[in-house]
Image (tube, rainbow, N blue to C red; front, side, top):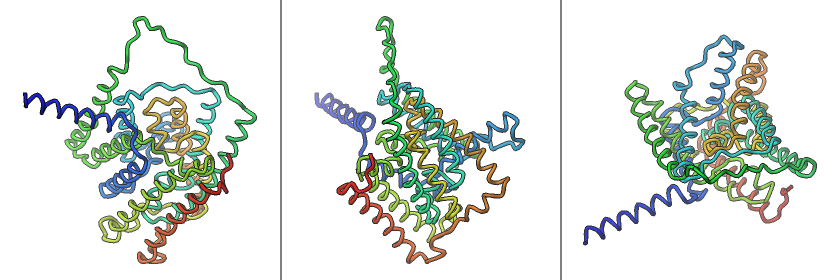
Length: 396
């Protein structure tokens, strides 16, 4: 009897843990902390976290396979950023399946056009800025690259312009809702029964993938796959999206995502300072963002794109894992455009005119760089909190 009671108690607690982990949404502040730790793990394991280079690798393969380029790119499964992106996508897919939230989601035709345009803008913006919202903004600021702060300003301007367009669109181009055809209940298979098992299988396959890479003496890639998986799980369970930090203050005045991203950046930045200041990684690692022309203009263009697409580079991956078909268009457009624009910038020589990477401590020393970094982020939060109360910059 006691044994049954003990087993019943264990089963009840496991059910609660399962429900809390895979059924309920996680708080965004927790996601911000966890993402910062994952970014630091990737930094220690390999190099600063980025996403755009993984998109670009697939775009490079498109041009190589179509004969437009004679340079053979690195195989996707051997490209470290592609591996992180793959892990992020599969982690979100597994989370969506286990929680029965995966569904092929259609959108109005106009949304697909916006997804295409958004992908083109983001691909071009990332090429100019030397990275997307992750590599060019989040990781850039976290590793004390001044270009990250310039892109931050550009993203804010781009979000403003993107919202102005969306407001105009709502007034002049109303869209018709997409109605799904009712499905016959006869002989209909209930996918909700099998989805959690498919999600669990994906998790097991990713763990197996880590061991396979290790067996092939590619342990670094296996670790990146696993870290990407964790980021995908975190982002999907919390609905974490960097776009909200720039869109919500302008659309509703809401400041929550601003202080979440700022807090996450502080954790990442403090950890990065320990890593670099203590020479665990080279102090200028990850500092290549073209300050200021490339980072600022790239940020503006990227910001417009992420508003049109309804997602940034990271949220495109996890929302694609949830079944959003619009983001599949964005993904393809981003990959092809980023590869094309970067190639054109290099061939034309314009890339050298966009600026160079500048490491903040090289200019003002670590003793000033760290407080400056903190003050900038605190100032961003205070402005967002003031705007939430005054609605000074709310345009929607």
